[in-house]
Image (cartoon, rainbow, N blue to C red; front, side, top):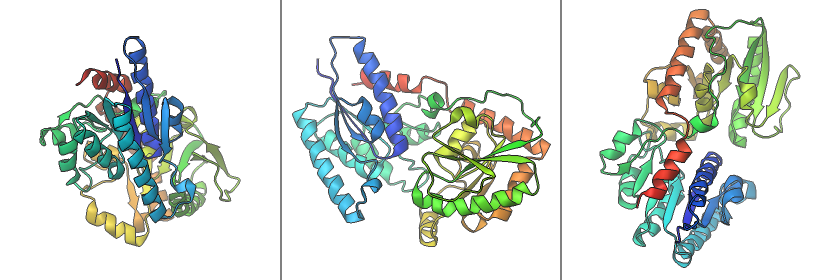
Length: 365
């Protein structure tokens, strides 16, 4: 029996989630030899390792050195390939992972061919561009949201939706040390500048100046975590580690990091933090016009209060960030934040998210 699947992810985190989901889907199909599933994928390095046929890399577009117009032409060509594969390979299910701008076109093409479409990690339409939910309702059969409150939002649009948990629960270890207070002479402060080059260039100088202030006021070890080797001169009093390093992150007492995936990972690990974020002035004002939420950190959004201090744009200064770090480190404040972060992890579900979503996708028609 043909159960061919096409899956599409367009950024690094989506590529990781998509690959893990496909691994679980393949396990389930292997348990029944009468079912055969060829996986066709567009994505990045992770999907490339698990797909039977890898169509094109769209995650590393920036690494190709394409100008924006060339990127658009490249994606149009990829989309044409996908349209052909949907028909020629008799695709039975389409799975989309975030990346709305490109993936919604795939959803429409599949819908017109009466192929069921499953959106795993749907776009955060609650934060901006709410009109997108209308197209999701039109072209997508089932949504698996990233956050628990999104379920009700999709249900209001009569979209079939299942919240099986946040997939980071499967990837990010829980806090190994349940001790709420700090009981060591030297603190460990984790530093995160971001994953994209332009973000790193905006954040890293501010973070380094923040460290200069903090090292004069507290006894601390500073570790800069980066996914890749940094092309930037780092002072010798800051240790640099590359990769995800979840095990080494468990030693962090407090972090300074941008909003996004890394702040969510730290929150799930129970690490108190100060979130900072800087954009170009033009992009900042554009974002303010588009974004409809009070906070930018998911822990604050879900708990509906500022547990994690945020220093955004003109407030992202070394003085303000260092002051907020020192405030969190006061014993009563520290214990309060740790307790709130434990509650936050509980809100996002239990382990086995990829497996539960895979089972739903296989069983739903």
